[in-house]
Amino acid sequence: MSKLYLDISHHHRVKNWAELEKNCPFLITKATEGQTFVDNYFPVVVHECEKRKIPYFLYTFLRRGNVKKQINYLVDKVNKVKGSNFIGYCLDIECGNSAEEVQEAVNYLDEIWTGKKLFYYMYSDYGKYKNTIKNLDKRSWCVWEARYGRNTAKYNKAYPPHEIVDLHQYASGVRIPFMTGGIDVNRLTGSKTERWFCTKNKVKAGYFKKCSKEQTSIIAGLKENGYKSNYNYRSLIAQVNNIRNYAGTAKQNIKMLDMLKAGKLAKPL
Image (cartoon, rainbow, N blue to C red; front, side, top):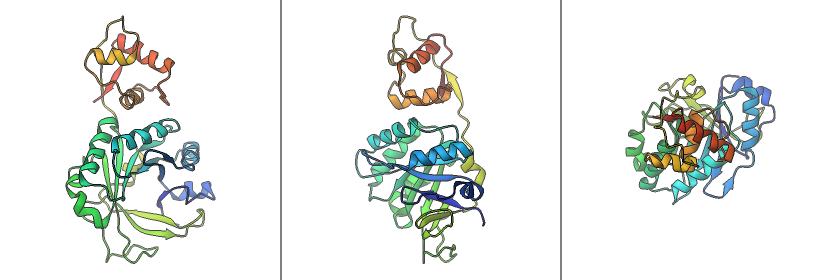
């Protein structure tokens, strides 16, 4: 069996993880939808990927409206379970979102996450999101387009994606022995290597300016010198400073505050 690049959800469960490990260099799976739905299979996928050191991306099905809250919801749920093989987030845009809110979602995700990201949309929506797609930072973003054509299990050259595309979803409902249900399958277009999807961005960091020793919280310490202090930014700071599974606990915040007072708290650039 040739290499498979799959995206799955609770509709597509793995019957044999050993076979998936042999055939799939990385995996993409659904984590959330909107502001209320969590895919109950994604923690299982994360656990198995961490156990087997399979790189993985986690996505949100972006509903209309309030995209920042939807992304915050995604990041919050992912932060509770992700591990060292987590590569990045994906925006699944196929719900008729306006061009303006999609641009807002991209801008916001760029603001709170410096790692790799996938932008998924349907071929027919390219014109609607063209400006956003063309302005994505290709160092950290992958353009992922769905175009099936006749939707057979093999790629049909008569139905190519747009030239800017890095990852092409060329069929859905494909039967794979080690999976249940019909699976979406993808192919690399040549613009990004397989390695891009399997390795993290290196996060460059400087250091925050020391806060006064009288400060009693990390939020106040960051605000003192004009830095952001929201939960997602603190999660990113925790990532840069190797504070794993940040959940805003008192112990984690005190550790960051002590580092900030000492001038040893690294910041993402």
